[in-house]
Image (cartoon, rainbow, N blue to C red; front, side, top):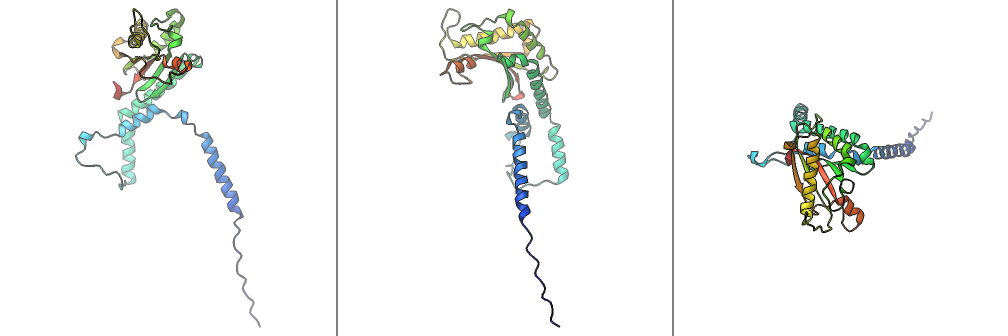
Length: 246
C-alpha cells in the first residue's frame, strides 16, 4: 500500500503586518500631536540641571563619562536623593509661581501690556514700555496703572517667592535720547527701573529684596530695524531670580 505524501505546511500569511504597521504609525502621529514644546518649563529644567552639576573643585579624580551602571536599588536611591534636593524644590515653587502669575495677569497678558516667561535668570514679568511710559520718559502713569502695580506688589508676597530676591531691568530701543534729564538711553533705562521700584515700594514691597539695572539698547529682544521690534525692545523686566543669579 503506497504511503501518502505529507504536505508541507503553507507559509504563514504576512497580511497582518500591513495593519500592524498602520496602527503603529497612527499611534506615533497621535503622541506627536499631543506633545506641546511650549509647555516645557525652562525654569524647572534649569533647576534640575543645576542640581545635577558637580563643582569642579570637589572632584579629586576625573569622572568617567560612560560605561557605568547602577543596580536597581542604587538607582532608586539616587532618584530619591535628587528629588529631595533644595534646588529641585525651589524649581517647583518657581514653576508654581509662574502659573499663578499667568493666571493673575491674564487680562494684561491678553492686551499685551505684560508678558510672563522664564529663562536662565528665573521668572520674568515684562512690562511693555509703550504701555507704562511715554516715549523718552521714565514717568509712569500711576492713575492708569495703579491696579496693575498693586497686583504686582501683592504677587511678590506669594509664599512660593516670598524668600527670593528680585531684579528690575530697564531696556530701550536704539533710538538716541538726549535731553536735560537723560543724556542717553543708559540714564533713561536706569530711571525707568528705579521708578518701577519706587512705585512698587509705595504699594508695600520690601525694597531690600530688589536690585535695579539699566541696559539701554544693549539687550534687544527683537531687531530694531522695525517699529514693532523697537516697541518690544522698550521694556522693563521684573525678574524673580534663580539662586545662581542673586
